View 1 (cartoon, one colour):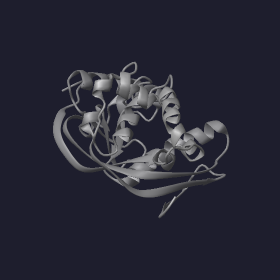
View 2 (cartoon, rainbow, N blue to C red):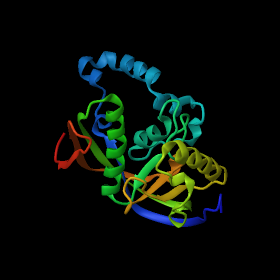
View 3 (cartoon, rainbow, N blue to C red):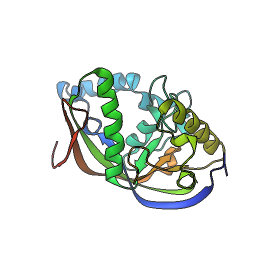
View 4 (tube, rainbow, N blue to C red):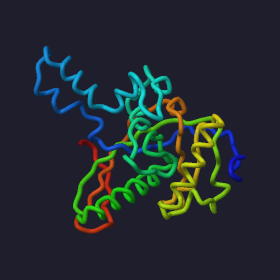
Length: 230
């Protein structure tokens, strides 16, 4: 038990994370160069990509030997840990190290993504946007902190200034104890369940699924639809 939260052994054969479809595409520069220039393009990408830097020599808070290689969609797994909000906290990770956030239901993932992007649009003062997200399915198993049994815990506070600090303290303690992550009731979709995997190796059997489109037409409530192609 950590901070009054029990440790459980769980296996989730199917979870879903949403990533923007822009991440699924090859570099737009690749179509502008011939074969002789591809090596130079790769060198440029390596110099500017935080994920590639993490994979080759590590970055602050994320040693290279923690990342995964030779497995399906390894770059998506590694990118989720290499990229985090600059100078800001998320619920279970800080600015130097990301996490793999997923849900047991796609509706929960959509609700979580919609909330955070709506907040970003509110900050920009413009509720006009169309963003496509692809499902990334994965299995997760091992020992986790289980906040389903502590729904009153401060880490689940909807106020990010309070909840995120408590969540980061919990995640740090969970990693120090060698736990794979945190199971928790969704804060943005009350009926849903989320899992934050705190180690790249905890994310297994990743496969791409369907694509969802979120459309804001001047209002903070997005229209949500499934699309066949992007």
